[in-house]
Length: 58
Image 1 (tube, rainbow, N blue to C red):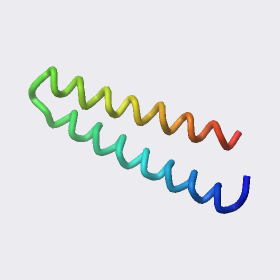
Image 2 (tube, helix red, strand yellow; image 1 turned 45 degrees about the vertical axis):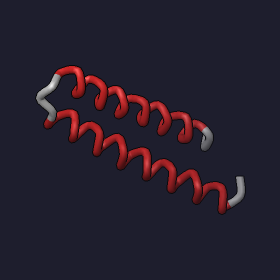
Image 3 (cartoon, rainbow, N blue to C red; image 1 turned 90 degrees about the horizontal axis):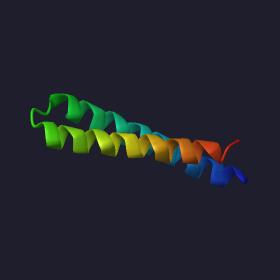
């Protein structure tokens, strides 16, 4: 990969980490069980995205 492509992946990994943290924090503050579950599933999806992008580096 070129240095520019690596920078793009680094940016994506940072964004995915931030989105996951935001979703996890929001899920922890929600009272409604259904909404909490939905937001937690979003955090899980962003974890999967992070892992896929991270896998590109290997």
